[in-house]
Image 1 (cartoon, rainbow, N blue to C red):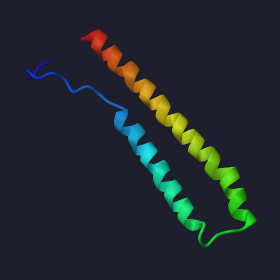
Image 2 (image 1 turned 90 degrees about the vertical axis):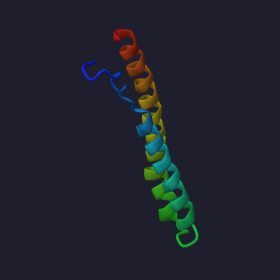
Image 3 (image 1 turned 60 degrees about the vertical axis):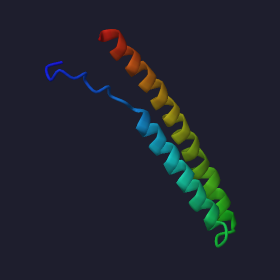
Image 4 (image 1 turned 180 degrees about the horizontal axis):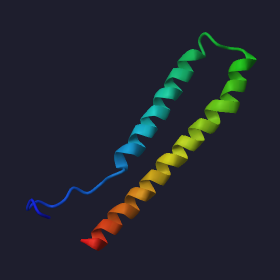
Length: 79
């Protein structure tokens, strides 16, 4: 490396933490809404939108962690 310092290793690990925090924040806000929203529309919204969103977000976070592992291994092998 020209500067004499080791290059910074790219990382995706912060992205998965951001996703997981967003899901946690959404879940807390959703729970708080139960105090004022208690009808069938709420149940339908949870089933049709929130549950799939949470599942996809958790899947994305897991995929990002796996990509981060692969990226780190590729960098390690190339240095």
